[in-house]
Each structure stands twice: as C-alpha cells, then as structure tokens.
Amino acid sequence: MTKRDAFLFAVVAALIIGTGFVQSWNAALTILNMGLISAVMALGVNMQWGYAGLFNVGIMGFVALGGLGVVLTSAAPVGAAWAAGGARVVLALAVGAAVIIGAVAIWKRLAKGRVRSLALVCWLVAGFFVYRWLLDPGVAAIEAVNPASTGYLGGLGLPVLLSWPVGGLLAAGAAWIIGKTALGLRSDYLAIATLGISEIVIAVLKNEDWLARGVKNVIGLPRPVPYEIDLQGSAAFLQTAARFGADPVTASSVVVKLCYALLFTAVLLALIWLSEKALNSPWGRMMRAIRDNEVAAEAMGKDVKARHLQIFILGSAICGIAGAMMTTLDGQLTPGTYQPLRFTFLIWVMVIVGGSGNNWGAVLGGFLIWFLWVQVEPLGQWLMALITSPMADGSALKAHLMDSVAHMRLLTMGVVLLVVLRFSPRGLIPER
Image (tube, rainbow, N blue to C red; front, side, top):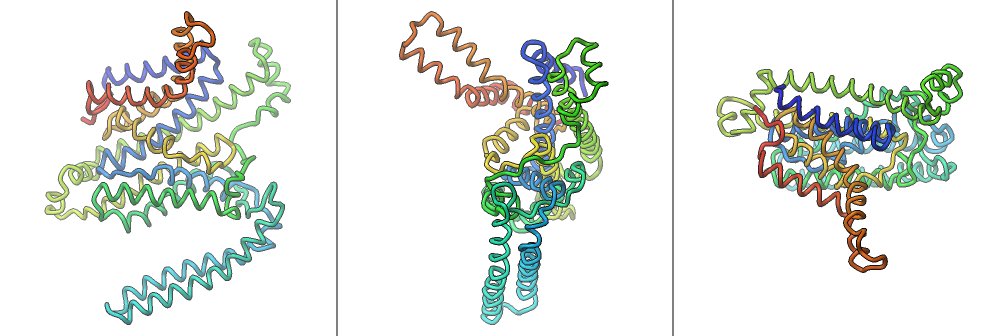
C-alpha cells in the first residue's frame, strides 16, 4: 500500500470518526458496520470482475442466499411444523433432486434423436407431478402452523457464527449451477442470466413461506454479541458506564456495535489476506492473463471456462458470507429489502470508484460509497434548507427544492462516478 492509498483510507476514517463527534457514535458505528459488510461484498465482485472480467449483476441473489443460510442454520426449529409436514417436504425435495439427476442421465446415455427427447419429456412430466403431489400438502400443513408467528420449518438452532460459512456455501452452490449453464455465454448475456436467476432466488424467498416465512419475515434471529438489555442489567457494566459519565442505554448500544465491528473486521482482514495471496500467486497471474486475452490463454493450454467457473463460485461465496453477516447484524431476514439498487448498483459503484482489480481499492470504495449513501440525504436536507431560507414560506419553488432532497443520493452517486471516471478512470486505487 502506497502513501497515497493510506491517505485515502485515512480520509474515509476521518469522515466516520467525524460523524461520531458531530452526530453520534451510534451513527458512526452503524456506518462502520455496514461499510465493513459492503467492503466484503465489493471484494467478492472485484474477484469476478477485476480478476476475470465476469459481469455479474445478480449480486442480490447471492446476498439473499447468505441471509437464508442464517435462518436455516441458526433459527430455532419449529417442532409442530416438522411434525405436520416436514418429512413430506424433505421427501419431495429428494424426489425433485432425483428427477433432475435422472434427466441428466437420460440426456447423456441415450443417443440423440426422438427416443431421447420423448423419454426426457415423459420423465420430467411424471417427476413434476410426483414432486407436486408430495410437496403441496406438506407445504400447506407447515404454513398452517401458527402462521402469525411461525408457519415455517425454522432452522437447526446452531450458533449464528456457523451460519456465515453456510451462507457462503449456499451462494457457492447457486453460483455453480449458474456457472455451469451461463459462463459459456458472452458477457452481456451472462449479465442478463445472472440478473434473471437472482430475481428467481428473491421470488422464491418471497413466496415460499414454509422455507423462511416469505414477506412476513423471520425476526428474532440469534446474535453473536450481547443484547443491550442484558448489558443494562449488569452491575459491572453500569458501574463502568457511570465511571465514564455515559448513559447506560447509549453505552450498551455502542458496545454492541463495537462487538459487531470487531467480528466484521476480523472477517474482512482474513478475506483481504487470502485475496492478496491469491492475486499475487501464479493462479492470480493466470486469471488476469485469461481476463486480458482469453484466446491467447486458451492457446497456452488454460481451461478458460473452468477457471471462470472457479472465480465465479469464489466471488459469489464471499457475497453470500456478506449477506449472512448483514442478516446477523439486522437480526432478521427481510426478502423485500433485497433490491437491485442496494445490492447491485451500489456494489458496482464501490468497485468502479475504488478501483477494479485491486482488493484494497474495492475495500476503500465499499467504505466511501456507503458513507456517502447514508450521509448525503441529511447533508442535502441541511444544504437545501440553507439555500431556501431566504424564500418565503409557502413558496412553490421552496417546496419543490425541499422535495428534491430525496433524490440527492442518486444524484451524488452519478456525480461521484462521473468525477472519478474523468480524473481517475481506473479508480481511486487502480490495479498495478
């Protein structure tokens, strides 16, 4: 890292610390925690785009699968739901998997022709009806179990930290399926395919209530850090807060956010270390050679499609880990919040502004863009109030300008992109 790079990180750190002094330390730590998660997501996308030139616009699907991993791993199992239809749903899923495996075997073993096509259609149609015959009654029975608060199977009740690698594995599995079908496509078609499949993932999460309650959300997920109410009930904590003259409620919230920040920082540092080792290894040089000239790399004996699949899975797994971290921080899974604007557009802005192909650049972009995304609207409201203060109350122009504050975020993201691409086309910390 050069002195210029260190200066840029120091500027971002100063912005976050300044938020603590000007607004509150709770606000500063909230920005820091989401900045850490955003940096992890940006690292994953940077692997795919910066290392291999893969244009993935299905980021929110992998993030959502990471969140689902938290529910499946850490939520308490709903015994009544399992008794009502759990076994039937598991059997239906096993039948569905067997149908897919059987279809692949038919396609590979039978010779091309009418017999193969007819056998494949008959197998798939019969398998579909058997699958639905098993699944639908089981799902109805599960969703009928106290739908106001449960209505789903729940999870395994394991420690929540175990759900982070599980979220990465779920995202990696989905990436393998997508990669096997879509990585042979041209980059623009790959983008369309990843976007479409991520929308399918979100649609499944929103509509399959038996899996994760759909749009009714899973709340009260376990946490790897203490609860504020427990800290406020601790005599030792109250004494420490009184010693520093701090309000116990505010102090407990700050301590919890600091604990999250330490966990997220440990994950980010481990991923940066691994990413830097990979990037500077022969494997990393090979990936960049494939990115720069696929034809030449293939002529040198490199399996381009296999390497693309490898990096696509790795990057998606990191996005899945970030999604699990974010769901843990929120304490709930809310599929309705997985919008492309938040998890696709913003992450791509982070990577482009920070510097694609450079891990430190992706991390810097994650912190900077998230800070701007959070702070631009209140700053814009203050600025617009200052500009319109000489105008008479009830003025149509004043009302219009104040209403425009809601669009300051998007305007700022566009301006930042234009300025960076004009004066530093390769990002703030470019690939070397």
